[in-house]
Length: 110
Length: 114
Image (cartoon, rainbow over all chains, first blue to last red; front, side):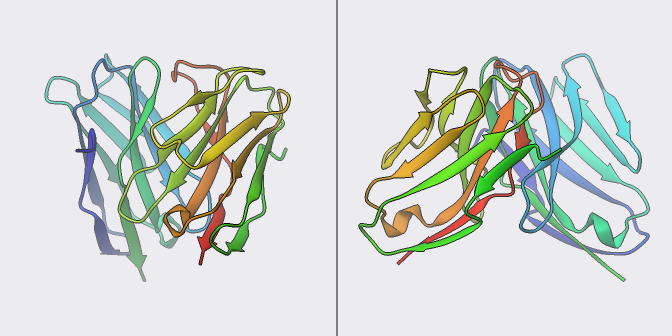
């Protein structure tokens, strides 16, 4: 069983709408959690990083939350744009390794 | 400002053929990684190199070998390709391990084994 589960697998929204992507993990011990954006045909690029003590972190229209007690994270995208169409990957690190979720494929339509 | 460069971008192999995927980074990072990405699955670590001169197996090392040629370059070799190795391969680098530093990824190599 994957130690990092993401939902939904895919999501289609209209341009300008908001959306929230979920990440649940069982990785232990916990070091940090990153959200990566992967455009089609490209490698993943880091959006945010969260450590154990952080609850919320924003990067422009992207806001990540972390609940270390329930081992859940979310990525909220505000006022979506066509360029937000991509896969979003949750990556949870223990002390030495990165554990990757399968990603959520987001499609933003005009 | 190239970052992590992988070659080739696409490759088709016949079963049993061999090939080497090349990766180079220009960020003076110590650690380098090779991952494979399959549909519906997260990236899985094949091999990593914590520093020049060292390599270690990851989650799915069978059928692969690696060489850390110098600090910049980390190559992945398939000695006898199999259809199960059809995948997208990503090379990544980071300043050092443990992974509290950001990993930077190459553009990927899409490999098809027929």
